[in-house]
Image 1 (tube, rainbow, N blue to C red):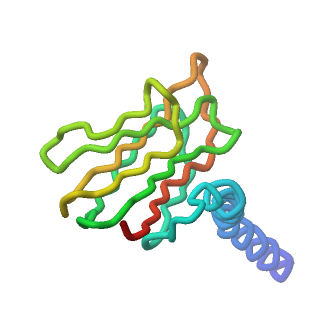
Image 2: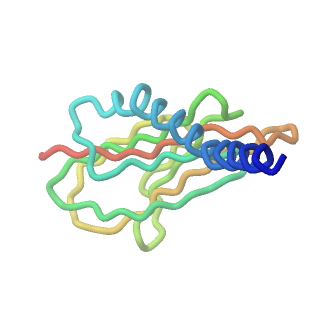
Length: 146
């Protein structure tokens, strides 16, 4: 009986540990198939940020942009989210440089004329009803020389 208990405990432990990996694999596939193609002729600048968010969640990403480089920022959520994510880009001093809350645009192209630090603030709007539905959200930046 002890052997069966150990086997069952091992199986349950393995299942619990692999559950987050399944969610990550889903988000990775979403990013590779739906988001990366939106970069078009831009090259990925560093790593992309992909995670599961739900209504009311907000993330802030800090990035340094360099003079003389064209940037493309893409923020996209999958179909599981009740609403598309909103994002704005602020200067380090807090000046809003871009805000998609009115237009819903997923892409913002930025020809950078000075080197500076920026904040990318991503918010998933809350659903009207009480919902804990999560979905993948990807924040991706691409570069190309001017």
